[in-house]
Every structure is written in C-alpha cells, then in structure tokens.
Image 1 (tube, rainbow, N blue to C red):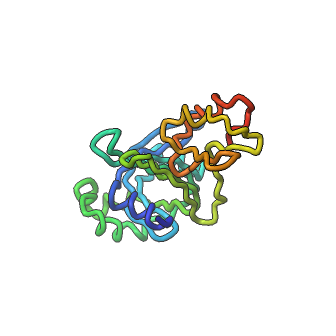
Image 2: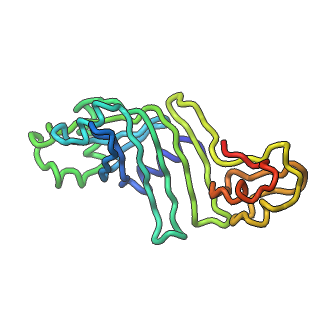
Length: 206
C-alpha cells in the first residue's frame, strides 16, 4: 500500500485513535481522538480550545497515536503514527461535521461549534502491523517529507550460517539460502530472539 492508503484506512476503517502528548512535566498523557479526514499526505482532527489536549498540542507541536481494528488480538490490525501538528483554525469545521455528522450530537449548535478548532498532522512516520496474517505483516511509511528510518534487526557479514537464529525466530522470517542470512523485515516481530541466539554477534539492532 501507499501512504495515502494507510491514512485513508485510519480515517475510514478505524477512525478512533488513542493519542499521546506530553505535559509540562514531560509525562505522557493519552486521549481518545477521532481522525476525521485525510488527503494523500496528512490527517485532520478537531478538538476544543478549552481542553488541556489543545494546550499540549500548541506547546509541543507533536503527537503519537495508535489505531486498532479487530475483534481480538489475532485478528487485529494496528497503525501507529508519530508526527508534527499545526492548528488550522475553524474554517474546516463545517466540512468535517458534514463528513462526520455524529459530531452534531456533541456540538449541536453553531455557537457551540465555535469552541472547536482543526489540527493537521502534516509530517510524520508510521507503521502498519497486521496480526491477522500468517506470517505477520508489517510495513513503515512516511509523509510530509519526514525521513524514513528502518527499524528492527539485520544480519551482518559476520554471520557464519550456524542457524541458531533460524531456530528461535517465531515467524520463520530468516532466509538461509545464502550467508549471511537475511531477515525479512516485513514479517519480523522485532522480538530480538535472533540477536540473543547469535553466537558470533552477527545480528544487530538498527
């Protein structure tokens, strides 16, 4: 999938997210926030200007969130994003209410809607994690010019082909067709078993 597909999935297939911001003491604070709209390179949500959440967004200009869909753990898909936010103001409120009509039940009058403001997540990186597939599927993506950083583990040229890592991999995602062995990152759990099992220190964390 492309970045726009991940953002569209968040808005239209999951919608409700758990967002983390940081308070004045440097401690994390979470809030349930609906992602109301998206385009190819950003997400949009709203909040009331009287909330502590609003203050934290204005002070930090950054958030992280996870959105999940599934009846249980083994059928779940999770999408996580870390990114920069900016306030856009009131102008898009009517449009977002039209696309999310349940908001009229929370803010039923035009006067009450004036408490709200729109934020845009305009730059960030994300991760897709699908436990419903065998083996699991994971992917990373970026938007708004954010630099893509590869995480997880990889096997260096120090590999001797002993197979210790293969025997402890829960997703069987280590390919041993040639030395050094290779980890299929799109199926890796990032559990670290391979690094702990390697007798020559050939497996390292990015």
